[in-house]
Structure formats: C-alpha cells, structure tokens
Length: 230
Image (tube, rainbow, N blue to C red; front, side, top):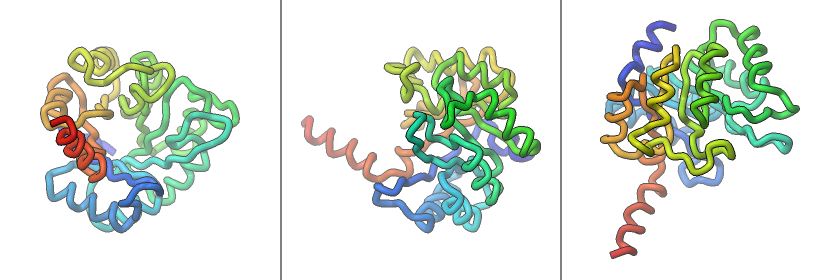
C-alpha cells in the first residue's frame, strides 16, 4: 500500500478510457494506450471497467486507479455508484478504486457516508479515491477517511456548475490542499504540461491527465477549430 502511494507522488497518471460510443473503445486498445503512457513516463493509469483494467495489467506494471461508469435511472451518480461496481472491480484488484464522492444521493437513495462505511467494512485493505466537485465535498471525503481526494468532478455537477479547476490559479485545488489530511490528486481539464506542473507546485500529490493524451478525436478537434477561426 505504501509503495503504491509513494510511486505516484509528484507524478503523472494517465487516464486511459474510451466509452462504447467512442472510436477507440476496446480493451486491447486501452492496454496499448497504457503501454504508450508508460513509455512516455507515466507513473500510474486510471481506467474504466474490469475488462480494460485486466488488459492494462498485462501490458504495464503500474498502479491502476479503477472505476466503472454505469448509469442508473434514479441517480445522477455514475462513477462506481453502487456495491455492484465495487465488487466487479475487486475481481481485478486495482490498486485504488475511485468513486463519485459528491453530495448527491446514490442509486436507491444511499448517502455517500453509508456507502463508504459499507465498502470500507467489506474491503478494509483497499485504497479509495474520492471524486469530488467542490471544496466542501472534498473536505467531507477527507474526514470520512478516503485515501486520496480528487478534483475529478469540478464543473460536472449542479453544485459546481460554472466552476473550473484552473480558475484563479487553481483556487479550488489550493483550498483543498491547504486543509485536507489525505493526498490530493488534481484531475479535470488539466490539458497542458504547464498546468500539470503548476498543480504539483501548488501541492497536489499527483495529477491525472486524460483526453488530451488518450482521445485523438478531442485533440483533432482543437486543431480543426483553430483552423476554422483563421
């Protein structure tokens, strides 16, 4: 556990994800994407679904942050929302399991506090990452005992609407880092090397970068939009 944490300190975690509607959706491709990230110096991988994680584990010997994105009709929470997803992830033993740690109710009306108590009791040795959208949520997750606190959901919830992680020189991140006891992982719209370096300078334990590395359609669009504005 300690080795996993230390391996990520001050380093880059690459999010290798492609959803079913995306052109690179394939466990094989995500495994090769993780291998490419390793060759580029990544210290960890964030991945979605046991199938992708299993393939990634055959290609790289890096700590994996595992999630399952699944939609439920009675809740807006979709990142590892229920015990079902946690159980599925535990079958492939990711080093860290990340889950939505916002203030929103989970499927079945379950609160974060009750859910976290359940999964901690069932899997006491597992490391957990809280995907949060506000400073208050992050500090609540920190108090609950999450091993890592993430800024993953900033701007993606009603509570954080209009917020941007990089606004005012990463003010949200700085406030969390100042008060949190557990390591803070910066994630969300960190789309340049300069931003990645800056969040580490501000005290983030590590930084997750995804689309700008692993989603060619997103990268291509940046170039085409720039040419359209010419």
